[in-house]
Image 1 (cartoon, chains in turn purple, brown):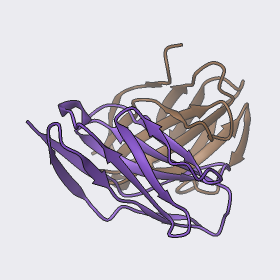
Image 2 (cartoon, helix red, strand yellow):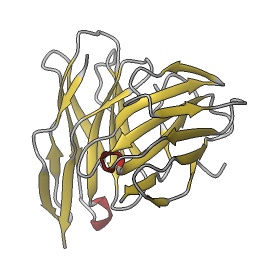
Image 3 (tube, one colour):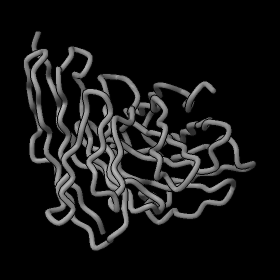
Length: 113
Length: 114
């Protein structure tokens, strides 16, 4: 079974600064997908960025980028130029291209004006 | 495309009552998933459908939980004889493929058992 660990329950960042959220996972699979999802307070889960394990190139979506280290089973999210709207719970998520997502425990990001 | 819709948004019920939640996925998505999220935790997988077939239900929390997707469109999740421990957010998600492009989540149904 896969496990996903987010070691930072809470993080804070100053508006316009950069913050990195950490995630490690454990799997015996070689082919899988990783995601970061954002869940604003009382709002639905939104996909932020995805990474295919077979791709060495790190995914980037505007201000969001990942550092994917397959051998280390690490998948961190970097948010550049943080904005107030980035404040949310962030979940690191594993998908073995099968039937279910495995979520980490989440990191609550606070953005200070 | 209005996204994934869940109804109701909130449900308060007395312990021992049965409750049913509905999920309407994105129309072209053939996969539909149910997750449960307790306060401060990440969602945990319950079950999923491909079209009308329920292909995984071993993660349903007990035999009090059941789900259906009778015509491969909307789905219902029923909890019988609710217990206080069932209080949680129940999330529905859908995807076009095996989720490799990501899932689209609904806003969830928050259940409170009193």
